[in-house]
Length: 154
Image (cartoon, rainbow, N blue to C red; front, side, top):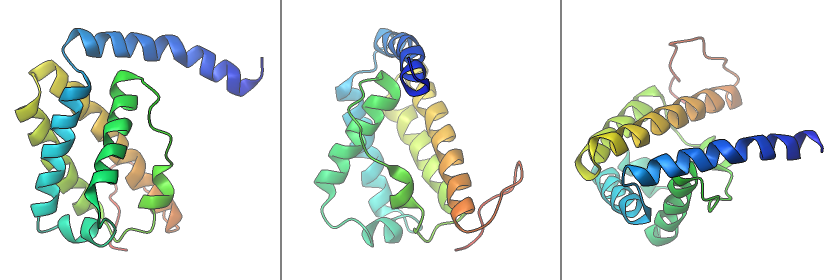
């Protein structure tokens, strides 16, 4: 067994356990779709985030479908998402303020749409995803963020 297949094999039980827990507290595809739909409706109305998204997304339906698959994979371990988010996000004109706003909107939406335990799962994963993306974008710009340091203006 090679390193990649071992890594995949080792991750499978964790993903199954995570999915079973998510299902046990009520997370399902319908909840994911409600969360994604309401969150991106807010994004499209937000003064800071809307221009960034509007510059890249003309047809929202494919993006929303991709986000359903993304969150299904992240929270339920379905493996439905097969994209590569970094190449799409790296060139965006964003800074730490954009990530803060994205998280604030996401967290508020998760708390409104989901029961408390489910909301916390989404929020915890969103925070990790945002931190990872922010750090990776900084690296593509030639910066190496120290702990607690934020992404500056592009």
